[in-house]
Length: 509
Image 1 (cartoon, rainbow, N blue to C red):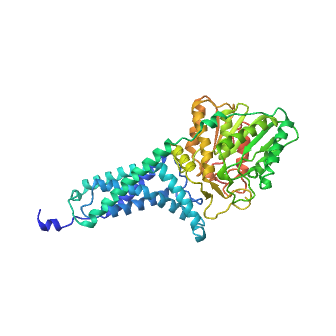
Image 2: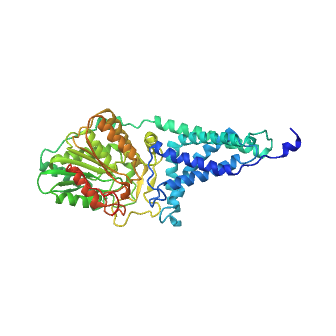
Image 3: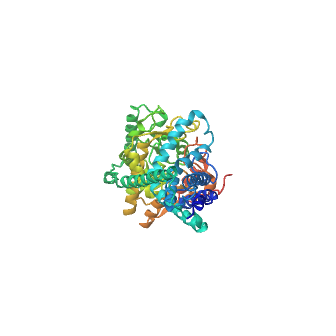
């Protein structure tokens, strides 16, 4: 090769950084349905959840930047660099996408909330990277290799030649080392977290421990005993376990379990509606909830054993309050309702409302790893809404933050429920599932999996879906939630209890 030819650099093909960014972004979009994670919003979410646009833009920008850094220089179009670029794109896309989603939420530019929002983003980034990051790094590494092969085919002059310039020779080595470290660390972290035991056997051993009330008076006495214990705690008065009774045992009693960080006050309006229909209504308080101090840290002490115990205790009480026992609950309370439906034949109906079987940002196959991570990492208190650091107006009884250890215990119970449902037929004769298609907090794929487990054992499950077009939030019960529709949801619940097909509008009126 002549000296003149050696010094003549080949074209840089700068447009390929844009092509690479688009390719990485498109593959990221196509991977979403395969992972089981649901994305509901096309452009932006007022709740700060990931939309299709933020995913596409975040991955596309990250892909273009790393392609330019690693491959735009002359004679640098190697397969190794393509793979390295894919790994780095996958790793750094997580914080970029989540940050874009946060920036597009309403009210998120307040500088006073930067710290709380940053902590929220950091937690979500860590959870997703340590549970699903290994898969995305491998996929996008393959995409990087394919892109380089396509570039070589389209522009043969890009096939690399030896280049001994010091600085640009050291950059790929450093990048390769970082990429290798990330792949090994993410694969290793996922393997370790997946293999860590969660001790669900102890939950199943006491799944249906019960001493049902044999009379109305006994049931009321049990409620009074519960309330007497609660009055010794520093609770908000509205958060004590609440019994709405007609003074006698009636045809139907409804038990409702509130969601994580809320308390029985969440269902006061629902309870009043059900009571007016002639039902006795029992609203139990889940342990570690309802402190008068809304900034309390006690939720970190919640255990899955307590969730099982309060479910069995409330069902025992209900046996004395009504001839037909209907157990229902929202989110974490929905896990309890599902647990009772799986394990107790004396629950005539079990209706789970958007049960928190897995967070939406984690695919079902990574649920064990995510739970193990949250259980074993130090507890963190995380704002539900880091942009405002407060509840919606009027919710003076709920915690504005959740504890990651408490959240993990709810997930631990959900894993035990899923394992049992896969192995055994549910015992409740009346199973119901209310699914909110617009819910961006819980995994709808995991809910569908639970329904399929029950159906595989021959159980009939009354599945009702609230359409995506209604744009309802996760909390379908509390009337203070701006994204709720209590009139619609309460009537749907009553219809499900009565075996009537609910009338649900397809769009917001």
